[in-house]
Image (cartoon, rainbow, N blue to C red; front, side):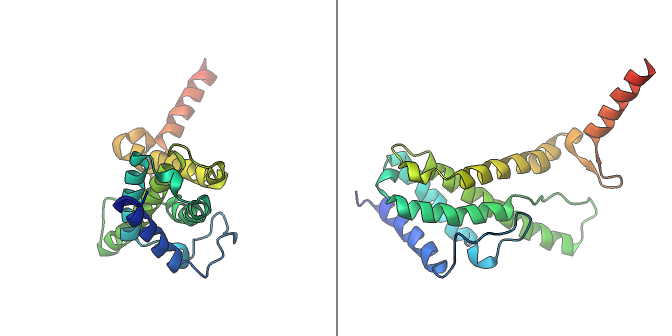
Length: 187
């Protein structure tokens, strides 16, 4: 199946492979350490790859891509997911120019991680995929990314119960638990 979508997906993958050709994808990166810049895919390339992966999945043609290529791509995507997995864009109300610049960089990392996670899910959830494509590290990293962003970015933006009081560093939920404990002790 040499459709335009398949060719564009392969070109996007080939461009990523060319940029990461000399890297050891099996090298261990510390859990809390920063991902080296060489492993990171530029945001515009990742957005294109995500879009083409979605189209290829909807056509049911993802299974014709060789599994070795997909496994290599998933290993690269895992590094990009890791880069955005433990950062949050929430800042204080009194912002200055440095905070705005920092916010742009953080949002770029988060969106890169989101696109990488979404692309990995498009690949792994496509019908008739080879079992070698289901990499446990990538699945765990996608879950970790989603869980962290939900509990530290999305929920606090909409529900004050999840917000951190910057002066004390406590979650409001912790305060409620302490009050409940105090009620039980008094009774």
